Image (cartoon, rainbow over all chains, first blue to last red; front, side, top):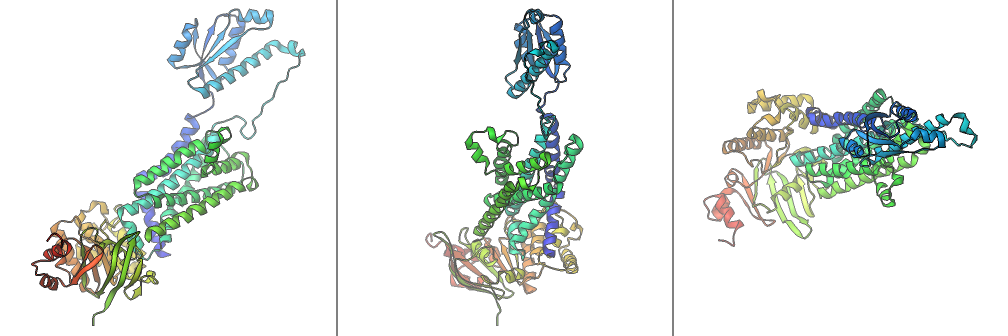
Length: 369
Length: 244
């Protein structure tokens, strides 16, 4: 045991002496939370909107004001004719153009009907869809106000939409669980695979294997510090998202931490497995980054919903551990569900941990033969 | 009268159909410096890896320090030291931290580590380097330090796998002085090398060729037997018989 502790102490020295390791461990998660939370916002705020008003009457004025005062939009410029539309988009500030037809107000009052066009910048499809949805909603709202009770004789069904669990549809509800999932698997798998291959590359692994330390002790000793630091990381990320975004953990925090530990363990065993198949540090880094980062972002349901993917990708994502952890963490953090609803995913993670451990032990033995 | 510390019987190691060690038989006696020579690819490294427990033989019997390599590997590990071709200390730790780490791994008590450390640093005139990072030290010093660390726990046998690779001649000389001192302390030194002048310093040498031991005796006897001026000549006569 004393031998083992001395060995763990040495591993901590390695980590704390190398500012790059420290940066990857703590700098990147913090930066990612802030970047994903603030910059990569999927919410519309102050989007530039240009107005081509061919009617210039009281109604168009009111509607324009309603749109620009909503907080979602800001008027970028007034256009004079159709030729200006293209130019306005190309300047970059304008994300959408609203065109009021000639005699907009007059037609509306006399015939009860008039039309306007919303043109969005399709080079950014997500934003474009959001913008058109928002403007349509504002326009609908406006018509309802204008018509007042007078028109209410005809049957009008007005859906009252409410978002459960995330009433304001804040993007960071989606990003924080995603970032935790991404950061943990990256750090654990990358760091452990690199630290173990480093010993192989420098020849210190042989010295350790000749020594009375058992191979299990060597691996555990190398992995233990990362286990502890990754757990601290979870606390840091949760603390940050609570302090900065006010994101609470709805469910049991104990359950969340326990599941995080399981996920960390799984990632560490994956890192060990990567280290047994790679010859040097570059390979380990390559496998961890390319093999884990992209699939985690694209296929885990972090950003793109799995339900909307072609079936093939759905099957591929089933072998991605992050998929299960994202489900678990979203359930606990945002919906506040208990263990009853996530035991299947938990079981999958346990099975994966065992599988990776078994494979690593086998690979390790073959290398010794 | 001689104590046998390494005995190898019919050792065979195959990698698929390739035979790296073909029926090796030899004994190494307590306190001697045993040189293990051979061209690159002759099977030296495979053999030293098996002896030090890094690899398992396909068949044959290996006894180290009185223990069977197959059945008592843990007991052997406590009794051997190992230093490999590649540098084996941690560059981002200080001299002192490296010594404490290895001492701890071999189960030495704190006071014993401290005692040995000051003894060793004194002998090497290394006192002022105690708190320096290994990465700040020149290669020669590191190599000497690595050797001292390999025998820190007073093993019965120390295995050195090409310990002087890439080291300047002066340091190599000093290194061999250290090897002599170690042997005088009663530690058996098992060393592989391809510097033939170093082979002259050994008590006995064995020469490997294509997986077999083709010669094993004292450097003097071998030179007589092959009618050669130096071990180098012996080696060339044995290892390249076709060309002569």
